[in-house]
Length: 122
Length: 110
Image (cartoon, rainbow over all chains, first blue to last red; front, side, top):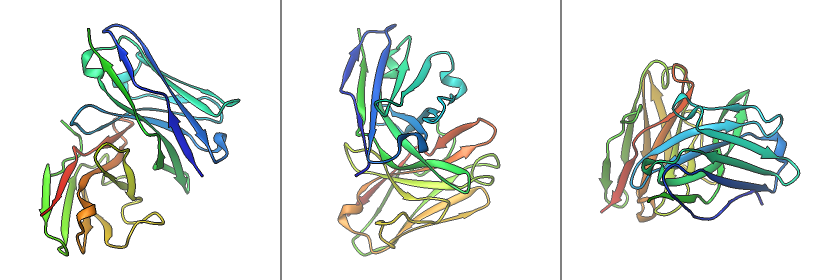
């Protein structure tokens, strides 16, 4: 079955970096892009960017440009999201989600990772 | 402050029909498809409606979506206790080049 399995909880100090992994299984990895979405405690959802698992191309919203980096390892079907210069307001659950496309219109689809808690605190 | 606007809460009794609204603008809802997600406590969001009004396989037909202009709605008929969850709307925003979300609506089944 299709699964996205993420790495475990992280606790970081302000100014540090965090790298979260998302390992895909059950489908052809390079056929579907991956987005990252985060959710601060008790808050809504926020899109952090997208990576093509086919060619490594990325798309980041302006808010995160320069601070986020997404990479892919096709040999292990794993996508990584690194967030630098962490602040307390980066404390959130981070989700990877597989992108689905219909007629070249792509969207955040039905397969999500279980979420990774990242706590930023001194 | 979310780009898409949802009511923070909604409620209904079992068997009732409830509607959750999602208001946006020309660069998101009017121009692009709307998607709805259901999030049970402590779990990842689940896709409920795609392309405004389409249900993924496995989603009961009690859930339906609609869109008109810069607003969209999610309707849940025959409300059940297991529908108690947070519901989020989402759309691509052409001006921001971003996925944007509503702030979420907490549905309580009384």
